[in-house]
Image (cartoon, rainbow, N blue to C red; front, top):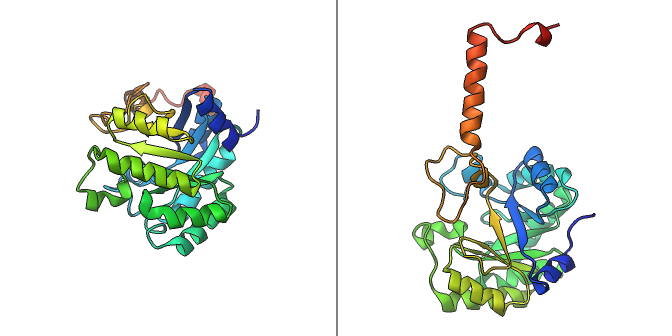
Length: 262
């Protein structure tokens, strides 16, 4: 079947076929997502909050992103793997961004990188595209700018969102992620752009959707999921129950039995 290509993604938009993206941060998660038939896997800097237990994504390092992305790429045969550019490489300008992105592509084999920011990242995106590195733009709520945004909140400035989306498309991105924006605005952006628009908390008018692996599977200790997420399983309860059963069997001498001994 082969790995999904940029031209196939664009064709999906033209044919009004929805694009499926999920995050993954390790080998087995990526294998499962790939075998489930998703189109794209994002190695997000959300690894900081989801896996490392950090309050924000800002502490995630380039070496950590490369470490996780290399595992994910090795696990996939079909899905396109995209890697988040961690803070602050894009904020430091085109030269630093190209150097960091080149390491990601060279050391992981990923298909491209994702960059947060709209019009203010034009020069950086252009430099990456000119260097032959495919780029996904990311507009709306941008977790790397959480301290200036004042929290995780819906971004409602339609004019700014449309301007940012146009700006990154003109720079050569092959897709745009819209995070936490009103569904009407997201649908307008999707109609406006020739490249696919992938939503997270942006309604069903986008060309595709992305969800965090752990939210999708209920594989989290959070009491409630973000409003934009949906749990298609409840692995937390299953896993805790399994470990409790194991602990009970160890304490009562029921594990291991003769068939599990040498």
